Image (cartoon, rainbow, N blue to C red):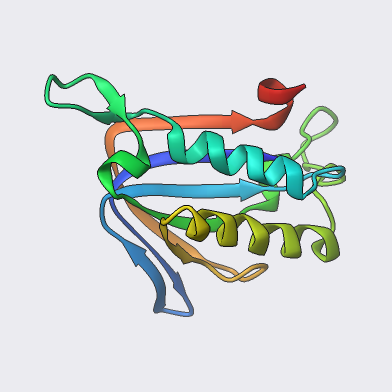
Length: 150
């Protein structure tokens, strides 16, 4: 599983010109799911995400988590995070889990965030989306389960 986490002051997602999700302070998270990912791994990634300390404290140190600041998440499914560009010029997406695996795990990811008390807005799985954001900091972090847990 791969997450691209951008700390935002606001973010939104549109489908066919209509806003389907929007947040203020929090994270815009691109969520990529690969072959072999499962619910246990998703739970570990959710725990890492909500406890990641990248919000400033009173001394301007990155010491506070999403839970500490009461932030929200705009969650966007993103199979292209598993693009393989080693050969040629056209990416291969063979490492991205198929929709019958990734869609339920994406839903599970969002449900686990909500169970931790996080307000979650989301895009629509598999849809063409326009994502807007104001990156706060800017702070962008990549969380990759292969680097974190294996």
